[in-house]
Amino acid sequence: MLMALQCAIPVFDGLFEPHNNTIIMDLLFELATWHALAKLRLHTESTVCALETSTTRLGTALRKFQSTICAEFETRDLPSEEAARGRRKAAKAKAKPPILSKSKGKGKGAEVPKGKKKKKSTLRGFSLSCYKPHSLGDYAKTIRLLGTSDGYSTQTVSFFK
Image 1: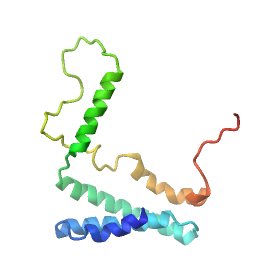
Image 2: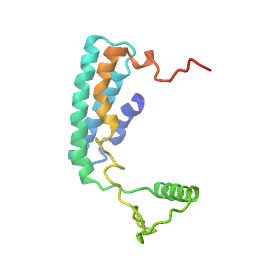
Image 3: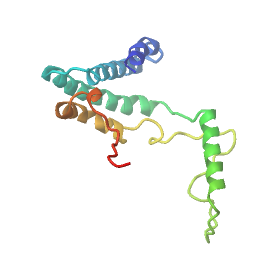
Image 4: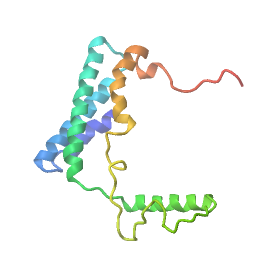
């Protein structure tokens, strides 16, 4: 992934207006820096401190990205995403027996007319309210406690067969 982040910087450079370009370039740089520090196989106290500082800068860059870039651009589902949602909905309807209800409404989800793309909600688009961005701050503490991530496994172990 680090190589992809390093390669992304020149690819994205100049695609947006100068103000937005600066924010996006700063975010990509902070992501690449954080990722490089987090994935080191040998840490010292100074590299863990650098990771903590990088995490702070990354959080600032992510908040700036969300408040400026995400607020400025409206995202919509791709045709492939719309088709996949339709297939999932059809499979779910086929798998569940119909529930008899006294309500005459169409249900919770609003239908999207054909040809009209559904606007992505904040939770389906970029959001800092999900778990992953909140867990970034735990990396340095976990490295101090358990060592680098290549030194342990989160795979469950069964002692009985």
